[in-house]
Length: 471
Ligand code: GLU
Image (cartoon, rainbow, N blue to C red; front, top):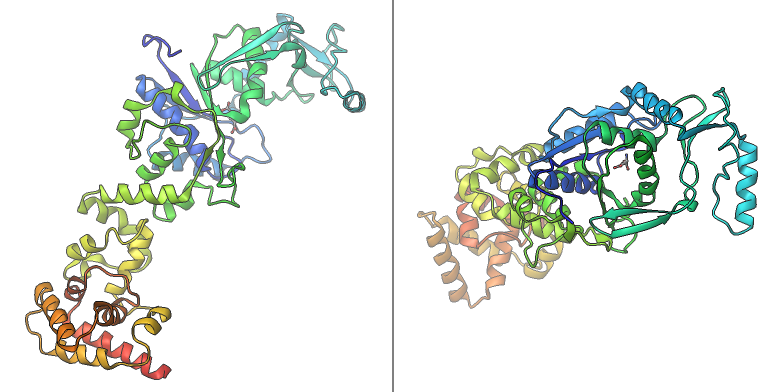
């Protein structure tokens, strides 16, 4: 079903600025972006801000900045529906002049009554076409409705779902201008897709039922057909639509939590699309490998453990210098000046895989810059109890060491252990706790060598003091 390469593909992301950019939205933008780039086409953005009450400039800025910051900037300046009223009105006039739209003055009471009767009779509520052939003139009480064909079917050709057929008799005469003359969502959406030269609509499957209605408007206006791909819903672990109950939903939150852009995009790309067993993708791979017809129909579960896993892979693939640039803002938040550590490159190498996110790694680095602000009590009970003998012994052994290197320190640990017939955890864990507050650190000789000898001794003494105070 892929179109001939001669056709220039133009896609669009059309957010309503009524909230911050949701990760489901990023996924929609990503698929639009990748499909356009794969076909050397264009990716555009349209701000659907006709709902003046719920749309704000702040949300719009958040959406546009978030898109740009994650590498999905549009190829042209975004357009705003709120500026384009005249364009929609002239499209509506075209429909009136060609006899494909009519004014309707049915009152709210009549429509409500009709709806209740239809529901009571077990029918789908829809407008009965009372004003369809009355040739009413425009007045302050009239809305403009599209004359939708009453017979036959309309087929939506979807890259994901194949052919979806709708009976025209189930699609009533849609309102396209409200009584105050303002255009409705469907009219604006269709006119803009045409005006922006869109060839392919890629959006969430919640829009499927809008599609036959929008095709009727396109047909009435004589616009060319579009390609469609309706993406499966993004679900939480319980298979319900992803919401704040499951996980953070705004892109910003994931960035603040220390996930790399490339890992977020990788995770989102896999929501509804995959390529064999390949898990780690970068934008270039996506553009090369992505096939719109391979998008799955079933809802796609957004799983933060998957994101953690992919983020760890993407962090590991950064060069040390790229890693330092990426983690810098998280270190800054913790007032860590990376270079103030005399072995910071070795430190970063040793610690870069200590967490799944940049934020976690930054937190794990904190104890190399200041006293631990927390000691793992369970670990203290398990490995130290209330005897500080080993800590005191080690402090004495350490004070005799002049060659402060990983190798010498490792030898010191082995020899102390063997001469006292102690297990590795009995010796190593108390030292780790003294240095980092927890039992998590790289190999102990290396960890010790990342501190100055005087710092190690101070930390051992501090932990001894804490344990003795507690007893
Ligand atoms: N503005 C619509 C939304 O935010 C998108 C409409 C479309 O993509 O056609 O859900």
